[in-house]
Amino acid sequence: MNDTLTLIVYILLGVLVLGGVLFVLLRGPKAPPGGYETTRDADDAPAQGEPVTTIEKPASAQGRLVRLRARLSRSNNLLGKGLLALLSSDKIDQDVWDEVEETLLLADLGSGPSQRLVEALQSRVRVEGTENPAAVKAMLREELLRIVGEDTDRSLNLDGEGNNPGVVLVVGVNGVGKTTTVGKLARVMVAEDKNLLLGAADTFRAAAADQLQTWGDRVGVDTVRSDKDGADPASVAFEAVKVGKERGVDTVMIDTAGRLQNKAGLMDQLGKIKRVVEKEAPVTEVLLVIDATTGQNGMIQAKVFSEVVQITGIVLTKLDGSAKGGIVVAIQEELGVPVKLIGLGEGPDDLAPFEPAAFVDALLD
Image (tube, rainbow, N blue to C red; front, side, top):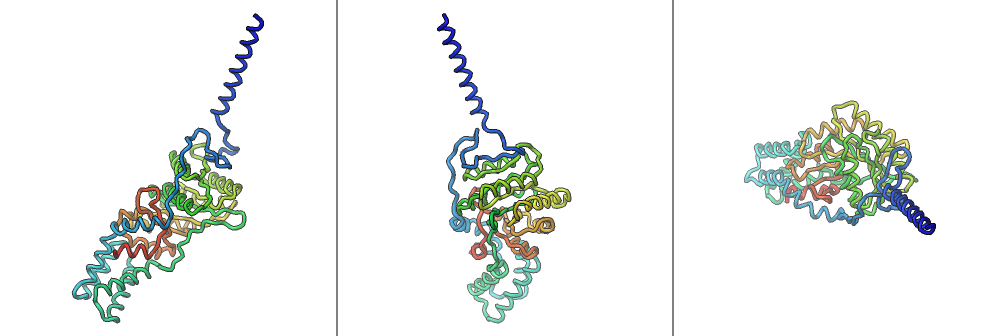
């Protein structure tokens, strides 16, 4: 009888111990102090509760340019064909030049650049004394390259100095695809063997952090996020940079909430994010995401954002859905800030560095 009771006690103890172990395993680790969490531990082990998936290998930037050039050509062929048709006329008179300028304006090139381009072409046609279509097309290509800015520095400042990581702040109005752009840019950087960390500072949109984390998980990149909805975005951004600095990553990329350019409070908050982050490390790149289909509205957005935070580069999305590629020139003309990246589709690798020669050739293909 005593042996039976002893056996029962041992069995009960064993069940309790096993249950406690299972509870700890299923519960997972506690969030770090301060209410922030990363999707993976520092040794890159999968986060608790997440399915282990195969890490994707993003396409190289060079491969994207080759693949996307045809798409850019198709989407902007109305501009290119219109210009070539006009300049291939039997007689290029003032009426033709007026139509050329009108075509450029309709493509959102802007009045100043359009006028300069037409005047340069007129001068060359007159001086060189030719109206041969092939020769005029070559002139048009050269003048378009000049006005787009063939020699403009479009490199991304992704690296910090000393022990600091590079800090990239991604900003823009609602609905332009900032979070998606951050995810796609992360893929570009991973393809270039960059070690990076993402910061989910869009704390107003409930799904933003989840969306950003999903993008990061696909390519093995961690995300720093708050464990509370509506947290202070500046605090999340600061924590991301702090964690990135501790880990020694190359770059910390911060996704911010979309904001209307006419809302002073939200724009002030964006300035606060940048100031708070720079207490930990300098911001090396501020990318403004603009939807190419918005045309001149994008210009207004760009001006306001540049007044709040010093914009260093433009990401032009949805260029495949617009024949108004002239917005590239108009924005650069107005702000003195280069277009550095273009989005040409919905695929995960449909973001590529902007290359003027490829862009112009696509227009005139």
